[in-house]
Image (cartoon, rainbow, N blue to C red; front, side):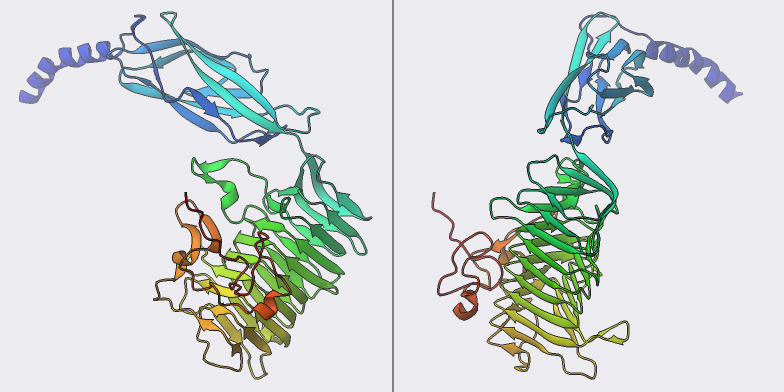
Length: 472
């Protein structure tokens, strides 16, 4: 009885409240609060629909507002598309925003292809027209890059990919056939779709310069968050795979990042030479060498889920390399360096593995792991800085053992170590333990570092020579 009386007394107020919520104002002073005035898209490939961006439209007023029309100024000719509170199209109508409420506006864009070699800038405007006649707007901006598409391409004759051409986007892998040479000019960027690989059964020549690197990366140009491009994440594409039929591979000033693996070598017939290059942020192995003859110099190999460098058999020489195992996405990571005489219980004897003036470090207590088995492990380090016990002079000659507890450990070794935005710069910091620890004898083979800085008589270990900061 009491409950019934209370409901009878309250019902008029509940009714009035509902009515009040449904009152729409047409006052010219009642406007929307737009979360932003300009929505900018990162550069996207033409002909492909972008990921969806969004922003919020707020009604801070004490009464509801009705948006009579939300439309694109271009009527959709620009390539932009909108969805407002569930309605899609180039123009939607009668969008109601209750008092103290908000609605989402979703935007995506598909820019038409054209004949331009350079990115084409496109602008449009979303116009919000209220019942009062007041208009508000958000500007949309995007740049579209034309490209060449390669799908399951198998090269049966020699090919040169020129830097002045449209960028290539590779789907379903690019395969270099037996006896075929693929040459990539300096300044070229190859974009790989998720899962796509570069598979080489012939020969690969990718020789960049200090000013014009050759880049192997994923094809996502957008961001996961405002501060985090997908290009800084792992596993955005496949890897470079050199088969046992590969007759040789030369990489100079190559930037290979954000793949599943970096480079995998399956007992290639020719030589592998990597100089002045970077392999970074991969979900598997950085450099995987199986029964391979390899020379690696002035090169950074960093942040791999498994090992930055894995060597099973073959002959390897590393000069002035930085192997840095700071893989950030999983604590169950591999080593900076693994050298073994065995793979899957099969014997792959190391003929020789030599490291000169190298810097090998990471998160673990020990970043150098050797598996000799019952055979001699033909492994030698000369004038290196290593996060391991260097007491055994069978393997270590004039080397420095880095202490995990020392002041120089981890981030203080390097110029930038941002584990939030995944920004790493492995150039040496002021207090780096690697400074001055190399040998001038081995530095004569590579007298300048990756940046072209001369090493002089007191070379640093690793691929970068320390540079004093300029006084302001």
